[in-house]
Image 1 (cartoon, rainbow, N blue to C red):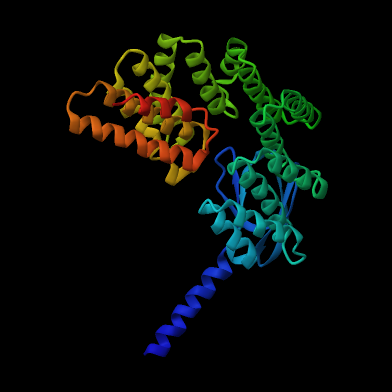
Image 2 (cartoon, rainbow, N blue to C red):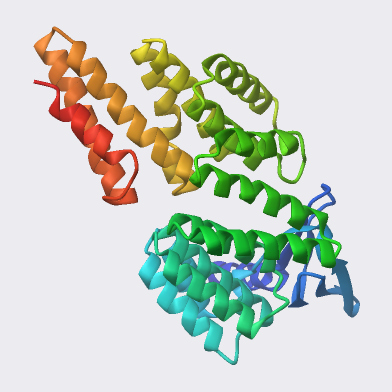
Length: 364
């Protein structure tokens, strides 16, 4: 009997591995395509399906939202790198993905995914120079990579991160030009939205706001535009406008089937800022805490960083006004804990850190 059970388990595992497939996910809601992806570029994705025999087909890359690797058909190194990336072990993941890029056994899909994952990891570990080097490497090996647009967006973000205005301007113009030349209107939109980030860095809030409002209702660029719009409304101290927009976005998100942690956190942060400005500090803390807990599900983001920093500062303000010694100590300790979380995840250069440190020091 034990031998029979063992055989059945083995056959079940073998069957699962045999039927496991790469996935192509489409932007328009077309059902996922299970297949084996054999080649891909930003123009076309070539894949094979089994209909008696293997049949090779193509998908227009413009219509593809993402491609997902079947880990049963990937290398051990790729799977180990993916696990390290999922755990936030960026250096370990980068080292292993670099080996996948050089592995002659690895499929085109694995090599391209490994290359963009190195870019993602370098950016996540706050290494803009390493991110830019990884982007250059990706383009040298695969000039028409499926991940070209994403790499261009990271190039702009990395330049903004290191304060390179000229580099960011050049990268925005290059992506916009590429989008127009290749008849990729969503690329041009993405470039324009990222131009808003460049204007923010130059403290041209109203100019950035004009760009963000242009795309706030766009299905491709709308979420990023809404997040930028909320930031600019805060910077221009338009508290009434910020309140209206944050509540409208939160209402919209309640009706969406799929969650969007970045946009949700940004909207709660904005609502928290409105409450902070109105002296409703405990209500603001509740808003900011909505975003603090999403890290385990969604990882690092500018919005999560803001939620942690501002939640900590709100705790320090509550502690400062609290007359009950036990409650004062409780809120101060929570602020200290959030400071440790902010510094641990985002480093000593976080724009929210010094304000939080000062806020804690003021609590006697």
